Image (tube, rainbow, N blue to C red; front, side):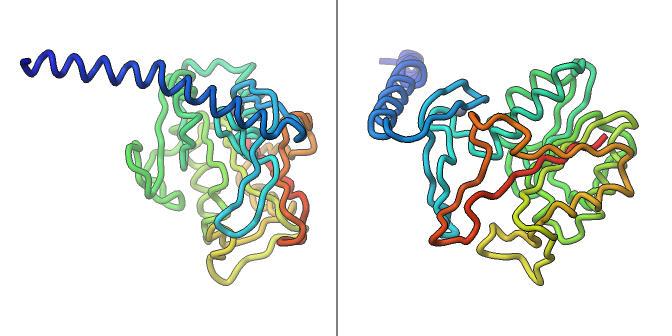
Length: 257
Ligand SMILES: [Zn+2]
């Protein structure tokens, strides 16, 4: 058998694996999960329209999180709220001429954004296969380059977050939108003396007062929290009370224009 036919055979097998075996296996795993968790509370995933129980998750920090992940598309709490907010914002806008910068780009959103926007760029300091690997506090871009910026759960990792917010605003066009989300985990913002290894190396715990830091830079600010959206999507971060004193951490989306 020559190399060509070997190669053809390999390609056919790969296609069968991708198009048939993997989806069937996934259906079986999902069926098994539904059966084993049939008495659990049921929710809806806005990202893939799955309806049923969600997966609990034990985080590396030792915290157990209830109803965290969609078992069908793996969207977790923040992905689901992110999806709802973004769909709502983009619904009435023509994105076909807009340029987007996606910082710390979530994999599940990349195909959607690259189709939706005329130009789509990704930035992350550590990820492979992104367009830019640049520091958010010193963006090497011209003023007013982008129409839409998304940086979800990024600012709580940056010590000089005011510089990052200022840079976001600088590279945003005058009528552009930045979605800058942070987890709200306490009443009043606490700056940690060093990155907290028990909180994914966050450098602060943000409270609702955190949003005051945006005021010097943005002319309009909209705060969207878990409790303003339907409960059927499960947009809370439930933690095990025996391990962590808070039962539900509210996630907050911070939209600036
Ligand atoms: Zn899903």
